[in-house]
Length: 257
Image (tube, rainbow, N blue to C red):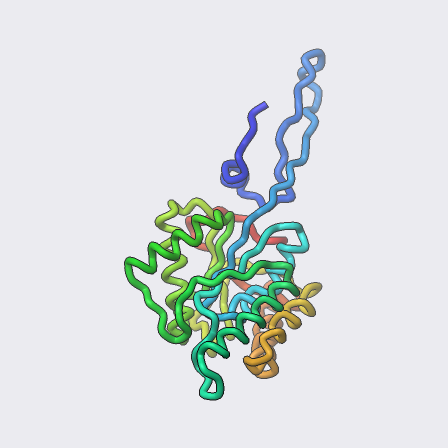
């Protein structure tokens, strides 16, 4: 029997799988008999990159919950700690508060937080930061990477998208690559999905994760997110859904479905 590495198996089958199969053996006495199958369970490493604490949760919280419920490992990689943007708190205090909120949100989604070390509202996209972001992803060794849509009103979101895409290119497109939307119409612009994930059953956990970011007026932002989720559900035939754009050169069928 030939054995495959996790990455090779995924690239060969293109399945999310708790769902790939290989032959177990062939009976020499009955060579024409059906070949038994042995099921191989593949644990994926999923990275969801976002500009600020809260972006992955609002854009992908339901999908993250679907992944972790299936036993896959998910890391929420925040470009910064959300330390800017408040006249009431100094950056150090606000960054600490939002870091605590991010950790709580990740606990709810059964994910792990990670931080890329940039500063809120002052993103840097240059050769050094391309290399730094690539090293972060290389250390994580993802099977799937989600990032923000590059046509977005917030510069931190655009920077995250560019850094993630460059890292994917430098890592030879060796894992799945998807874009997600946040506050469609207000932040993400001109987003036309190619794939959907039904989040109806896990929406309460997504809501709880988003509301863990209590400093960020979740009543306002989650109301808009619910409108987007319901509209994407209408498009895809579900009560609520999250939408994605898969890069055409990315392996397919890596979404929880």
